[in-house]
Image 1 (cartoon, one colour):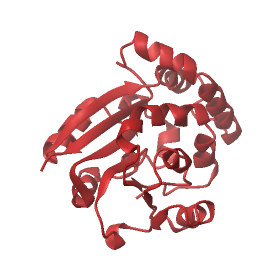
Image 2: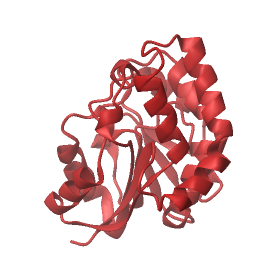
Image 3: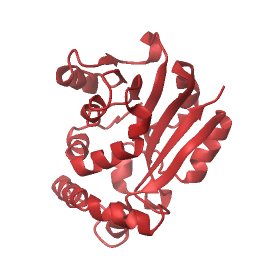
Image 4: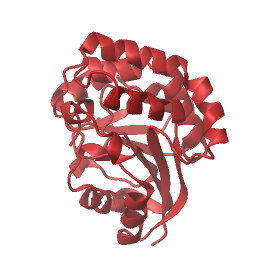
Length: 231
């Protein structure tokens, strides 16, 4: 389900992008604070330490065995970690898919299945890369199926009878950096160059926050949405 082409560097590089991670948490904090949460497709756990600052009721699903072992080493006795949904025995206030469903071809079915583990009036939080015209070789190499528009989420919410509580594009600087990288610079960047680009982008997050307001969140590298279970 997640990061089939995992080699280590790509997840670690984004996990080190602390400004961006804090930016993400600011957008979803009210939906995870003191909540019973389930993080699906946790990867190497880059967001889990941030979750633990808001709640001590954290569970995770990571279906890639190598990544699950990394999580068990990092968060032993701090969180519950599952390989799949089969062993889940309770319902959660909030289920998170942070940069996950872009790896899943049948993501509609995935959301349908997870709903039974969500309390009534609970939330599904989805964060995905935005704007499919920005799809690059990097997306392809890390196993992305597509990038998303708001209309994709509206369609998903309607099919699953979920109410949209929040939906917005964000990280406008990231949007322009990808645009420049895709259409002006070499499309096949080396790993070292990608790492450097991630560092530069991460340092520009405060600028991105400013321009997000200027653009009224009409563009961005990412799309964040909060869906509420109403049935």
